[in-house]
Length: 192
Image (cartoon, rainbow, N blue to C red; front, top):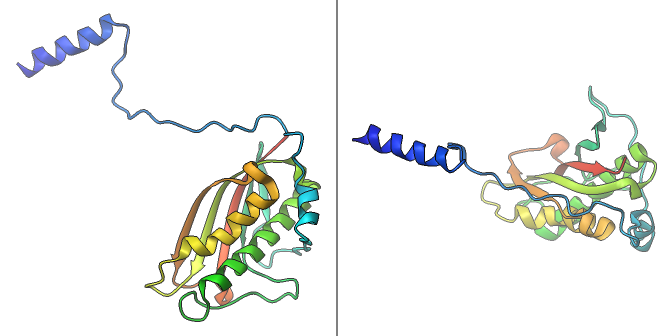
């Protein structure tokens, strides 16, 4: 009986011009930013926010700051190195509070913007921040990871406007290199 019912159902689908699909339909959000808005100027926004970008030097290990493939740039994880050359270090929930973590994430954002500027020559070429992965050096029962990584996300939106809104992960880590408080990696789409 099951075979008869299945056969009848398939016949009905085929007669309607539909094909059986065992996969779930996936919905994606298209990039709403197809042309450069007239008021889009991240370079000017940096000045308004009083942000000075910094030379990131050469990586100390066997990797590069960024890799471009097509219109995407994948940025390596960066830490909260400040203008004085020192990282903000410590565990969230033990050595640092949420506000200090937020500030650390902002420092990471400045470092990533510095890498982008070095790669592109001009931040106005950034079409959209696509994805951010924020890693927070935290004690096991710390629960405010997203509030810490907001420091990064908020700065991206302040600089790029709607083009700075992104998909994101904010996760806790048992440790990070050099005991730095936060590390973030990012993917951006650029105009050709």
